[in-house]
Structure formats: structure tokens, C-alpha cells
Length: 280
Ligand SMILES: CCCC/C=C\CC(=O)SCCNC(=O)CCNC(=O)[C@H](O)C(C)(C)COP(=O)(O)OP(=O)(O)OC[C@H]1O[C@@H](n2cnc3c(N)ncnc32)[C@H](O)[C@@H]1OP(=O)(O)O
Image 1 (spheres, rainbow, N blue to C red):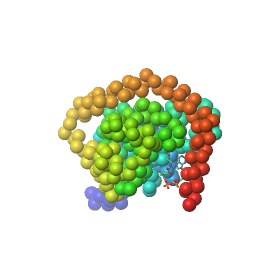
Image 2: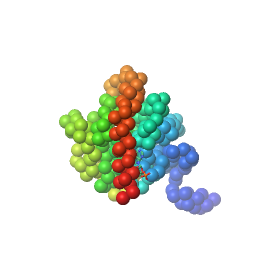
Image 3: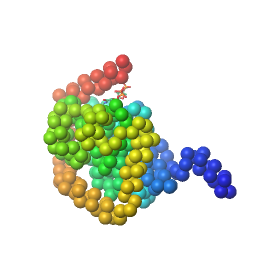
Image 4: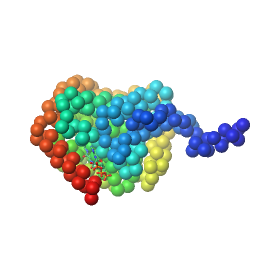
């Protein structure tokens, strides 16, 4: 009996169980041994964040919080991209109501992750521009694969990242470095990101990145969970309060900006260039 149970565990790749299926654009797997949940973004080819991905992400975070996991690791099912940020195709040539929904769900996903009381870590197994960087910096710890890119490149698209979107970035980078990077729309290589403190460690494989994230979460084993989470949230309270004050206006500001003809035109050109590059 014991032997056949062990064989089943080995066949499943160790003491893991699936908590939700991949019919959604995210999936959750909890390691029975460590109690740590891995939340995987699964929208190939680049995990661009459409409304559904953002809604599924919130639902997976809620699931992990309610199943009493010990921590959350965010990662990607795409081989070379953590997340390419907001789905530009969804923002291009659309109506104001859709833009309102996109931005509201981005806000909801960010606050669910940034304000989570659980220990959170990102195993950044690929590029993480814009909204990808937003999710990674909403976590408490980041481990990234070599020779990938991460940063907030919004100004390159002719758009302005609002204050809340910069919060995580500003939590980890000195103001001087953050200001320069944001105004330049700079994407950091993994190695530059490590040198500046934007990521905490480099790992050579996704598995190693997941292990390093799990070790970070494991470092809280001897800390009282309530004391830990209240301390974390004290650090984040000011940013969360400021965000709550402006969140409705921020949606309307985004809709006004994103529907401007010159911004729409810029998105069209940006998309065309992306497509040209991917066909090369
Ligand atoms: C007023 C608006 C405010 C918006 C504010 C904020 C935040 C945002 O998140 S805006 C999104 C900004 N994102 C980017 O600038 C990233 C763009 N993508 C890339 O740089 C690369 O794709 C990336 C480095 C992530 C990956 O490179 P590759 O692995 O080489 O993949 P490809 O470039 O070949 O892409 C494959 C395929 O995906 C399409 N794609 C890529 N990114 C997006 C995106 N963000 N939205 C929609 N579609 C995207 C790309 O065009 C290719 O499509 P096909 O040509 O049809 O294969």
C-alpha cells in the first residue's frame, strides 16, 4: 500500500497536487510538503495581459489566500517570457468601456498581489517589460533567468506610468535610479537588474528560480505569520492608501489618455513594429 502510494507520488513528480485546472489562463499548484503555491500565467506566446488573464490572476490569488498556503510564487508557462505586459491588441482600436474594464482589472490584479498578506516571490523565467515588471515588483522577492529584460518602458509607448504602477519599482530601487529608468523607458538586463537591486537573485533554470523563491518563503518558517503579514502591510499601507484615493480618477485618466488619437496611432505603430520584429 505504502509502496503503491509512493509510486503514485513519484509518477506525479513528487508531493504535489493540482488545485485548479488550466482551463483558466492561470493555474495553481500547491506543494503538499512545503505548503507553497505556484501560480502560473499561461497565455502563450507572451502572457500579454488581457482582461481574462487579469481576472483569472485575481481569482487564483484569492484561491491561494483561502486555501491557507504558506506563500505564493508567481511564474510563467511561456518558455522565454514572464509577461509582455498589457495586451496592446486589446487596447488598440477599441471603445472607452473596454479601456475602462482593462485598466480596472489591471488595478484589481495589482492590488490583490501587492496587498497580499502572504509571502510572495516571482520566478521571472523570461522577459518582464511594463505590466510584467509591475507584477514582478508587486512581489516581495524576485529571482530571474540570465539575459532577459525587465523594466517599466511605458514612456517608449508615449504613455505615463501612474504613481501606483511605480510603487513596487520604487520599493526596490533608489528614487534616482527609478526616475532615470522611468523617464528613459529603460529595460534592464537581468545582470543590470541584479546590480541595481531590481531583482534579488539570478537562477540558471526555471526550476532553480522556483527553488530559490521557495527558499525565500521558507525563511519565514519561524516567524509568526500574523506579525509577518501586518509588518509587510505596514510598509505598503501608504502606497495602498494613496492608490485607493485615486483609483477611480486613475481609470478615467487612463481612458482619456489611451483613447487620444495620437496615443492610438502610437500603439498601432508599436504593434506593427512588434509584428515586423517577430516575423524576422
Ligand atoms: C495608455 C496605455 C497605458 C498602458 C500602460 C501599461 C503597461 C503595459 O503593459 S503596455 C505593454 C507594453 N509591453 C511591451 O512593450 C512589450 C512588447 N513585447 C516585447 O517587447 C516582446 O514581445 C517580448 C520581449 C516580451 C518577447 O519577445 P519575443 O519572445 O521575441 O516575442 P515576439 O516579440 O516575437 O512576440 C510574439 C507575439 O506576441 C505579440 N506581442 C508581444 N507583446 C505583446 C503585447 N504586449 N501585446 C500584444 N501582443 C504582443 C507579438 O506582436 C508577436 O505576435 P505575432 O507577430 O502575431 O506572432
